[in-house]
Image 1 (tube, rainbow, N blue to C red):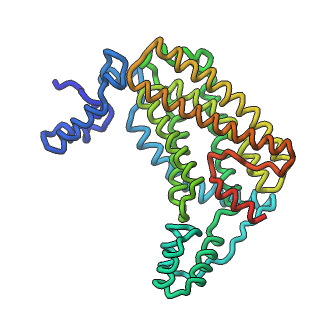
Image 2 (image 1 turned 90 degrees about the vertical axis):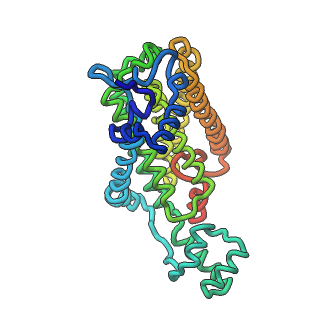
Image 3 (image 1 turned 135 degrees about the vertical axis):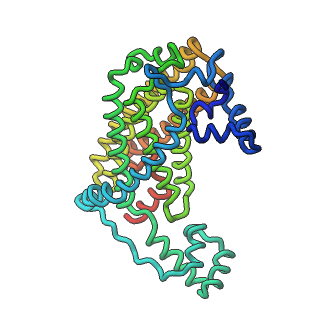
Length: 388
């Protein structure tokens, strides 16, 4: 009987495994790649192989294919529900009730050549490109400029869009926060973080933890797909948000593959609650409820400092760097340490921006303005200010 040698043979389906074992050029190449990438001595503690991490009736290990199959499928369902039920039937009526209009100027006459240019450059079209486009579309340069401006005004994000987007995120993060604590309250490693490392990697993945991971990954996949699929040019601010979502997916996927799910759930818990009052503050800004926005901002500031500036570095990170290595270590742990450190650096950068906002608020130089956002870009915020 042949022994299991590669990660692919452990976690992939029987059909793919059979294909990789065929004595074909492609099959041999894929086998070599698999064995090189998924070397047990890199990913696992010394002395263990991927065969040791096969699930049994009493011990369920993470399945690598789960983080690529289920979240992507669920994200399509999530987007369908968001755009066909949640936004039009719940959040749009709420926006109307608080006085947020969805008025949009009429779009310009259809013009395929100009549409291509607008999709590529947005409203900032280089002069040479604009001249060439005007020739192809049989418009004067001034008419082409007017067409670009009209298209931009008709398609740009307005406060109504941002209100709906923030509302979707408020609902999602609230569900994750409440559901996460209902699940994690009864997990022993929440109250004794050392259990995240003891007896590693023989940690069972409970069904509720499986759903917790899959639903959070579903949200970030759906957000990334939605941002990329929007029919307007991706701005620099929006690109930052997409990168943030992708990094989150990478970190969660990595922790799943290496069965760092226990510490992964704690990272999720720490990073969920502060987003809720921040998003509510934004919704109040769009609805011109400045007092309520300031209150939510204060709540957000307290939660942010308590969770991301205290609990994350001094509870989670301390355990990762000073306790984890006592119970286990392998070269792949350096990747995990790097990803967690990158999250800490981002938190500190956003903290500086938050305090800049707080100083401006205390000096009364203007109304509260959102500085940090994981759901929208700075360009979109600027656009809403121009409408006021």
